[in-house]
Amino acid sequence: MELIKRNIHMDCMKCKAQTQMTLEDDVIISDSRPDATKLIMDRGNVIIDEVKVTDDHVNVKGKLEFHVLYLAEKGASSAVKCDVADMEGAIPFDEMVFVEGIKGGDSVNVDWELEDLSVSLINSRKLSVQSVVTLMLTCEEICDEETAVDLYSEEPVEFRKKTLDVATMAIKKKDIFRVKEEVEIPGSFPNIFAMIWSEITPEALEFKVLEDKIGIQGELRAFFLYKGEGDEEEICHYETTLPFAGSLDCPGAREGMIPEIRYRAENRDVEIRPDFDGEERVITFEQCLDLDICIYEEERIDILSDVYGVVNEVSVVEKNADFRNLITRSSGKTKLSGHFKCPDEKITLHKILHTTSSLQITGQNANESGIELTGVVNLQIFYECSNEEDKYGVIKGTIPFQYVLDAEGINQNCIYSVQAFVDQITVSIIDTGEVDVKCVLYFRANVYSKWQEKIVEQIVVTEPDMEKMAALPGIAVYMVKEGDSLWDIGKRYYVPVSVIKQTNDLASDEVKAGDKILIVKNA
Image 1 (tube, one colour):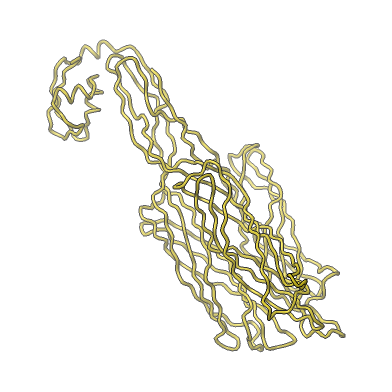
Image 2 (image 1 turned 30 degrees about the horizontal axis):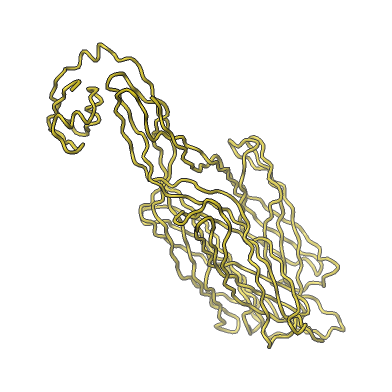
């Protein structure tokens, strides 16, 4: 008697941990940069340099990179009315995280969230940088569940199967997708003398599984602040949105598979090059998207669920195995608005130059109506005002949100990971020192049910219990009880289900309480 087995690839969470750390430092502005009089915008990014795993501990080394835009102090002889400069720096960290159950040699994925970044001016040459960073560590394994799907036997045995709809792990890997673009500033803008600040933000990314490829499309929102050519070195800004599309090689991928792809927009290179007339008007850049790729395949699998003997005593050894299947693909969007005042009441807002946003989900809970989400949208609104000496500034603010993402069939035991994005953000000046913000929040999630199933691991065949066999009647009439099935009856009397059906002239396996079933042993 031989079990025919099949490996079913499943991903399982071995262990996970989370830690929060505070990073702070006083940073000196380098000698190559002018003195600072006022901070405008800032941004931060966490770089993970090294992850070292030992038993029950993970050592994470990296750095918080920050970038600051500020108003610069002008020299006495300067003809420039208002100057803007930037500076970059980094705060290193070395964090030991307790992760119960992890072993040396395990692979750990480290994700992060920048909870807060605060930059303040100590004096014209020194900044105070403070930040709260949350590190999320997960150790996921690919578990090959060796599942019995059929049985080969030379002796008479009865076996039955159960059909499972499962989402199996087809592909799991990391990769990098590079987007290369170039833009030429409009003819009404002066040539570029020096780039001061650039922001390139991927938006509306969509992933589609194709034959041996992953299709990627989205938009890049690009903002550039530069000094123009000329004696006055005019400060100019240019913003544009660039659609892009491409694909990434992914052997084994097939249409219809389910993508679970998370990304981070990491390194980017921005360069200025001359146009056909030799003037510095073309901006080229390469944006790297670090992809964490999981691709699932929906399959219908018949597994062996039970066996009994007709001649010999046959029993099964079972074990519990974890399975998942997709129950819904959910997406939704909601509008959000906020109202903010400029911190400096003396100025008159003239123009909104650029707005950066980041979305943080602070809570999520599954219930009958869907996934309840709470969080905040953090904003930095870069403006130009009428004061020539203090021409630029920023309004910072947060807008809280609550939203229920519809997810039919979800419960507390389901697995889901919500991706959230800010889209279509607009800022308008409604008064001399007030702005109105409107945006659309977009959410999406694949929701999986997760359960344990008993699978047959081994079959044990022993000689029949002769006393038990002798005690069974050759012919009997069995009264079906609530919950009984033909399988249960056949197993009790060591009679094949097909024989019971033939004896009782039954067209199907369905029986109900009160039915009388004739049992003929060795018929």
